[in-house]
Length: 369
Image (cartoon, rainbow, N blue to C red):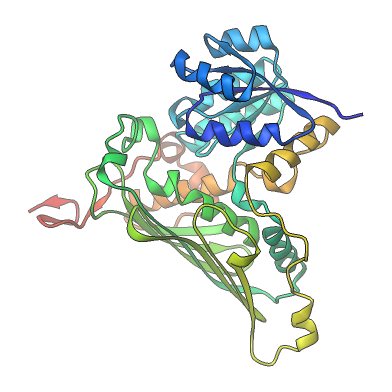
């Protein structure tokens, strides 16, 4: 018999629709409540997806008794809302970025451990049959050792995007596109390559009036020996999300925008690799693209069975650590940041704020001409 888990959603903005649609596709989930600071928006949401509108999170937790709370609000309130939900006995599925700082994320993880509740951060780029297949090939050594990688998040956001009150502010958004956008591809890169070893980075403001960066450049070294360049932009008219991993035997490439399927992946063998071996690298015949549905299906199946979260939803801090290291390196003039140094740097854990290099006309470095 299928166990049905009672789900609730905090925040009924755009991303909440993806959660509600995914929940509707699951056999073991029922949306019982939502809350939003705009009651009219919340009411329209339940008219589409079902459930009941509650005045605030506290009332919803006490009245609806959800098994799982989906946190779909701006990042500035993720930590207190997630912690409150877990302390009330609910598991949490939280949209990225998980928090405003590594310290906040650590507090969320600690709360999940105290309450014996699961904390899943939404990184849906990890999902899909192609990503699972490539991860298996890399992990098994079938492609040889990873050597060099490129990770690009080249998106376009006009000035109006940054003019939204909570965006472009260290205090309310936690960071710029490196945290809010690139963390998806950085997370997928780390999902494929494993633990990171060091980061060197710079932040740039080249085309938008914002309090944070609009671009960043970084070099990330992984424990496997692979080294990756990571480029982030919110000013690129031809948008692309891309990963390239060169291994001893092949080049793996992924080029998409906000989600990927088999057609977005390619595995190119190195010269001299046996054709029979190459044939074993082929993507599976059955295809499922990345998205919220496969992510939440795995999360809800694990919760219903009382098991640990699946790999697609585990390791909530790894990509956040890499992004924090990007900001930390920029704050220390491009210094090499290791995991140990990052954890020892209380200022970086408590705030991602870092100086940004101006490269617009009339500016040189951080100084106004």
